[in-house]
Amino acid sequence: MNEADAGTTPIRPLVAGNWKMNGLKAALSEALAVDEALAEAGQAVGADVMICPPATMVMVLSELSGKGGLQVGGQDCHANSSGAHTGDVAPEMLADAGAIAVIVGHSERRADHGETDRIVHEKVLAAHRAGLTAIVCVGETIGQRQAGLTLDVVARQLSGSIPDGVTAENVIVAYEPVWAIGTGLTPGTDDVEQVHGMIREHLSGRFGEEGRRIRILYGGSVKPSNAVELMGITNVNGALVGGASLMAKDFLGIVEAYRG
Ligand code: PGA
Image 1 (cartoon, rainbow, N blue to C red):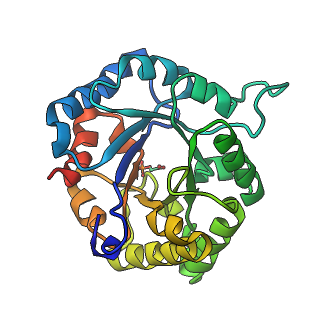
Image 2 (cartoon, protein in one colour):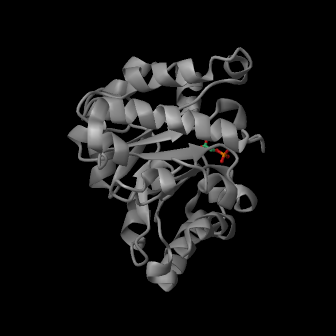
Image 3 (cartoon, rainbow, N blue to C red):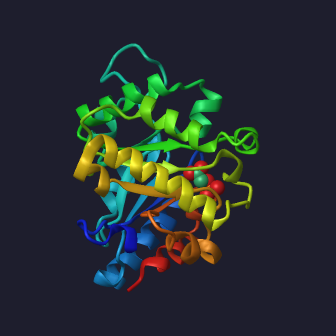
């Protein structure tokens, strides 16, 4: 929460871990350690905390966690609810396995699987059909940033990826500069503030009061050492964390930024 949010309903931040294609059974203990720590901290943690493990682990993590309120999400979904799509996961399946949210449009999906804004838009609708919150990722490449196109690129991704009529409960936006993901590089605080400010304007312009309450996460090389600074930026309502979410100690070090 921060001053930009004052005057409207306070926004409860979210710290979400994206495990990507990492996590065998043995890694469950890391996620459960996060849940345990949340249970011990109780109300002292002023944020929701989520882990998005690989699809193979969504059900077991949902069943074993929850004591501390740890939320579970998926990393991607197909737009259809069932059918001949070998290897894909329907949002209904993620919901059935205990997920409450799903990441869509991550830059790795956009790059590795050619996902366009149109496809991401369909996936957001599919997530909503299944009752899941869609965590919609946007962000510019280094070339686009150097060409001064960051705001244009992100605005286009928002318009193309987010359907009309969404709410603060069923959509979360994650701004993840592609060049900051997994590199240890982060944008300056002014740059983050500028992009998040534009995203907030876009959301409130399109969705009114709901748009003022939609959570906007920052993602890209968030770690315990930079979390307080990044989470303190106006209109940053939490983090989407990759590498540093794999170990409970690191992930909890980021959650610590929201300890009252
Ligand atoms: P990172 O990944 O924290 O490892 O940079 C973030 C993401 O891709 O969601």
